[in-house]
Amino acid sequence: MVIKKDGRREPFDRWKLKSGLLKAVEKRPVSLDQVDALIDDIERKLFNSTEHEVPTGAIGEAVMDKLKTLDEVAYVRFASVYRQFKDLNEFMSELKVMLS
Image: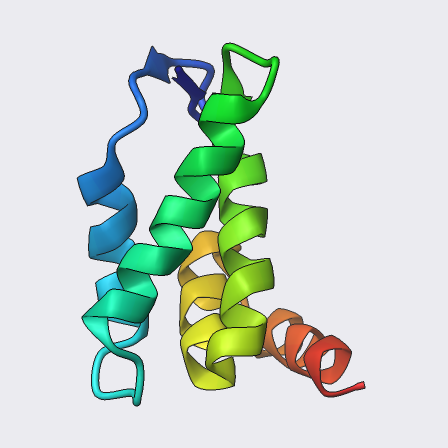
């Protein structure tokens, strides 16, 4: 089960994760096989975990960790939606962290 930000619980949905990733990697040199491998890795870690419920934040952070090494532009795209930057300063702070 996945614990949403508002406290709701719902089953893990591979397609939701893939949909978000496909938007992030759109027009980037990332193949569908790479996206599927990334999701497979995250899914494997989730299902092998002793936890029965995982917060969406843990899944989002795992995706960002993997995207950072796979494609930096896709990482920034995913982070901007996932972290819901409120203004340009927050966005720039994230970029500075990534660049250092």
